[in-house]
Length: 62
Ligand SMILES: [Zn+2]
Image (tube, rainbow, N blue to C red; front, side, top):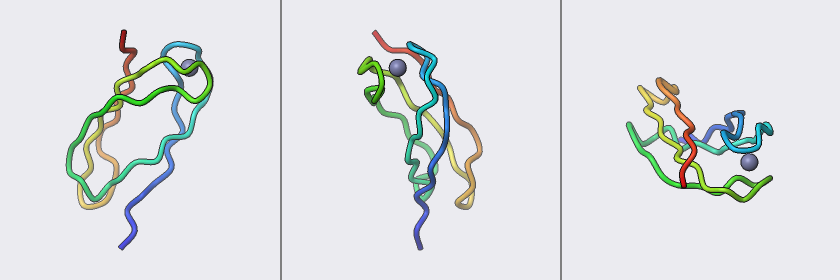
């Protein structure tokens, strides 16, 4: 079963729309990812319930 899902969000640094690939087979996770536009790090955190995105946060990291 493929639970990878593309999710559009807005970079907290540059405000550009970016598309993140989320793995919804994991109930909860957070990790640092660099913005593909401005290359600044941001904290991606989300939770999933039965393969559906339940909560999503994107916060700036310095
Ligand atoms: Zn950015």
